[in-house]
Image (cartoon, rainbow, N blue to C red; front, side, top):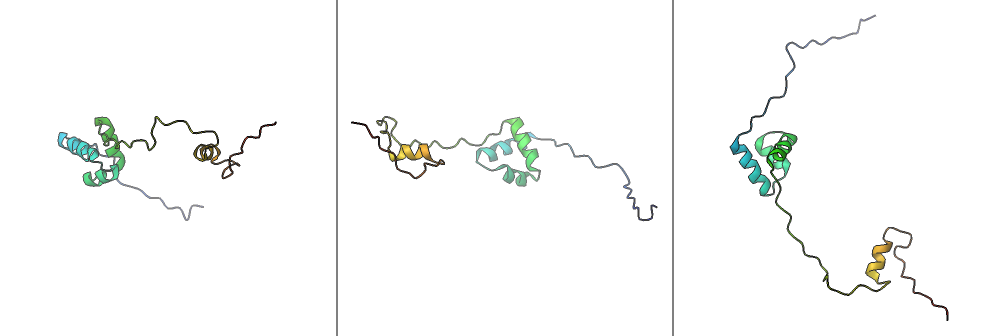
Length: 111
């Protein structure tokens, strides 16, 4: 009945993950690399640890990426509003609808 049954016995206890002891120098290096714009992956390779270990430590010590550079708006905020049916506003309103790429219907006023 149990002729083809194989049993694997592992001697000893299973290996538990090792506890990471973080030094002030490692924390400083992590903060510096992150402030310079390094990715979590690159930092993990530099430390020889997993990406998630680095992300968790970075979160705990407040290692933030550098702020994105401010990109000023392309338009003048003081400009007059666009008239009804202007191609830019009409295209923005109809993008992804059945009216996309159709011209603005000009109003027809009864006389």
